[in-house]
Length: 474
Image (tube, rainbow, N blue to C red; front, side):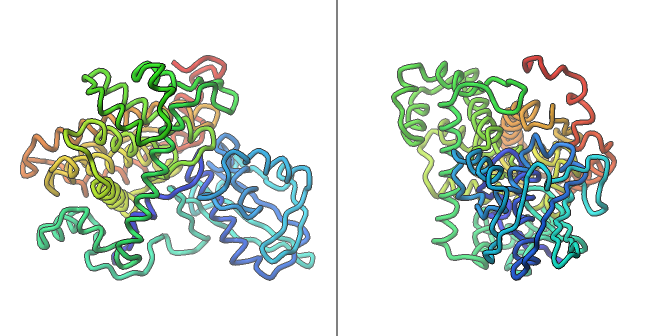
């Protein structure tokens, strides 16, 4: 059976800091309101958080996401500069209006309940939504399974729509077979499949919107100094690095991402500065993510900086200008590779550690860059394998439950690994490869199952328990 997942399921526009702990619970609340409270008039509601959602939910903004969902906001369009104002108004008013107009009391401090010592059976990221109606509590359980995907209790684990695609791919071997038989690039195959959901014009418009958000996030992150929220006092670095690389005067004069790209291209940076630019791009995105900024889940928020950093590197370093069509193809290839990890393993750090986030995003970016640089389909698939092979076993151990240490720097490292993987693949005959992408996805799934639970987004192991949180990041 083939699972049909669009690239736009892998690349979603939302806000930080976490797709599984922010976007997922947001979507779960929206589902609950629609599926269970459309005509109901409860006098009390409660949201109970379990497992990883409870252990790191405060640092990941889970309570904020729940409140924003109850207030009727959408993650793609909510005003990110007004988030705290929305929450303050809710605390003051102490009530929400359901979609049917019924008002019900709600106190975020007392009605969002964290249960860190308890887990639900379906997934580490579980939440129970409760409503008291006519004196009886009615419950619905949802699981945030990574990348903003949500499933209800006892719902089939498949999150793909029942769409019959002309070129279905459950495994990378099937992708290779389709492209070989049809003479397709990966991007061409993806577009043929995406036409089952939307027109070419709609595909292009959404891809352009995704890149616009990615580029705006990088640009915004390179303009903002100060400390990240949450108590760790982590200093933003992207803006200072940006000024050092571009020069104070030019950095201040640039008004938009288009001028920015042109200015960077004109500098022709050497190897050392190229490495710094890649890091700057990735840090900028994930500093914005940590500040509840607007980002593209790719495939998660915690790994949102890898793909835009690699694409930006390509735009700024390619000998010839990179056009809109090339950017769209890059995003389609990245999204397609992400679907294979979603189908064959996991993109949830709470289920598989950081290999499921940074590792997957690095593999996605590596394949996309390889095809963008003229590599064959087998070389692009091999690049994805190389990138993931060298992320296997990576733990998720966020200090203080915040998506900051080590998460932000890991995006820079994942981007560099993706570029290196692409170059290694371009220099090799795929027939000589000893490890396939399907095999590394299987190995990743086994590694995820075997990994100690404390290294899966709980803040109970690794760096989270071995550094003093009042020390600056090293």
